[in-house]
Image 1 (tube, rainbow, N blue to C red):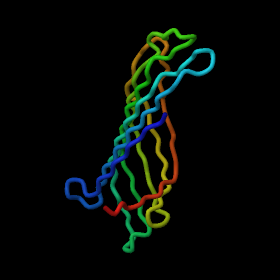
Image 2 (tube, rainbow, N blue to C red):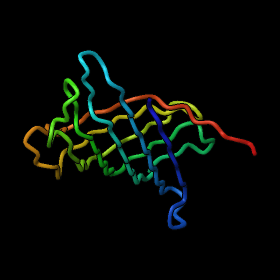
Image 3 (cartoon, rainbow, N blue to C red):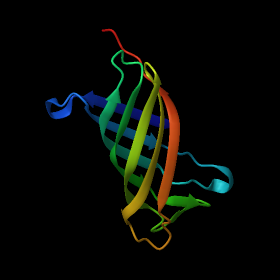
Length: 142
């Protein structure tokens, strides 16, 4: 099961072009074939971005800024036996940029590098990560 929650706050410290984003993801895994199960994972990503360009009509914009990501992986099970020290944590730091292609739609790309991680015997941390995507924003009228 995959669970996610995301928050965005525009105008951080009363600076209109400064934006803070937080994303939290959790992947809860079940037992698979041969009674094996990868560990559950948690991820928390904080991104602080600045918007150096914004069209007067809001149709196009550009964001860029640093990000910090924390990843946690729980112990794995193989044939019902817990694999000791296969769990661990990784702290990644990097940068991300978003480009607004039309109102509410952004194309984005980012890169992170491992700055600290657990040193378990069976834990294999992510050393670097490249991510990209397309997002569509919407307003909730309450």
